[in-house]
Image 1 (tube, one colour):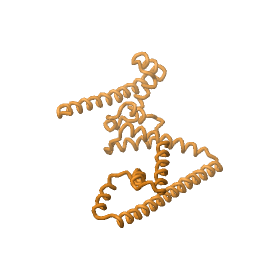
Image 2 (cartoon, one colour):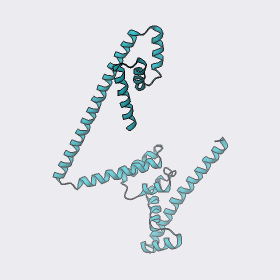
Image 3 (spheres, helix red, strand yellow):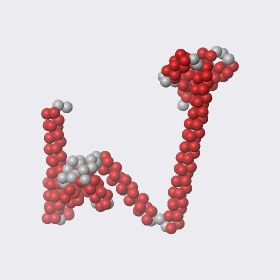
Image 4 (cartoon, one colour):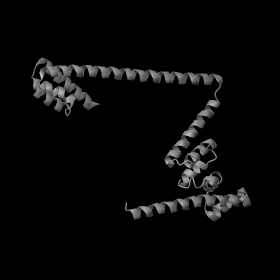
Length: 237
């Protein structure tokens, strides 16, 4: 993007953000004032008839103005849907304060990141509410189940790590044995060529090609048959 176009694009974004912030906050403040003057029932009729707003939309405006008025500059870059979620009365105050505080400190939280944090907070609150309703026996059973599940995860991880270590050791030993076998049988020129080719070749295919090049001995034929089975199994998977 050319410098002039980039400057113009930034200016458009800034004007858009200013209009969005002004629209949400100013409308929310006006609606709060009119609700105070008209009362709840008449206010809803007036909003629908004169402003063509649903009760839910009007509530979103008012909640945003009430909850985020003092931090309007901090949240001015956020889209209205994110503002509404931040201002929602169902969002715990500590979570709202955490998000606004992080924005206030200069952290570049995207709307997606904010939505994710709000979702996590709601799930945490649901879990805490569910746990608060548990009887002592249910609490003990749940704690026991958690411990058992964690123990299973640890055992599975340890088993996987052991299998990986065993495989690395097996491959390391086989690689070392092959290196010693080749080094004992290659002259300098063949060693240099083999060393160069091993950097480029597919070791899996090498087994089959080696068996073919060596000749139709019983062992070579057995390797070729095993190679074919491996390739067929790989293709089926």
